[in-house]
Amino acid sequence: MKKLLLLAFVLTFGAFGAKAQEGQAQDGPYMHFEDKVVQFGKIDKGSDRVRYAKFKNTGNQPLIIHDCKGSCGCTVPKCPKEKPIMPGQTAEIKVEYDTKRVGIISKTVTVKSNASNSPIYLRVKGEVKAAQAAFPTNTGSKNPLETK
Image 1 (cartoon, rainbow, N blue to C red):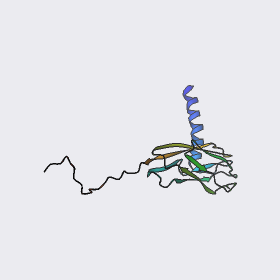
Image 2 (image 1 turned 30 degrees about the horizontal axis):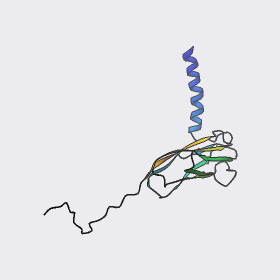
Image 3 (image 1 turned 45 degrees about the horizontal axis):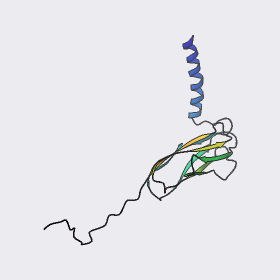
Image 4 (image 1 turned 120 degrees about the vertical axis):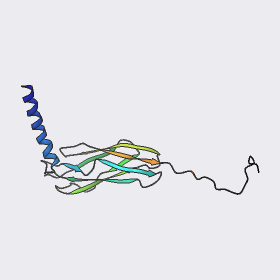
């Protein structure tokens, strides 16, 4: 009996998952992101600080984004200005990161909307490398410790 119930459970929820993965139109608004990871890669300190997270409303009703929030002050997302985002329409969320902070980037952007899959959590990843120190070139002066 337990096996039968488990099988029914797997088949039921497996069917829902398959429908969402096939890209079919969802009932109500639905945010489908190309990638839920906003990748900065390895970048130099003070370099390009903007990336975009593209998405599409794959639902059958207008999508309204209420809020986009970063997990800290160094990560600042900007919601699309056009409202609402109609079914089939694409848009993007602008994500700025403070590239003056050296080290690994591992942050989160939370997107709240009227979509059935809200909230969405985007991962912001990458690494900001420190500027390379400039080493002095040979100035012609001799090292007093050297012997001939």
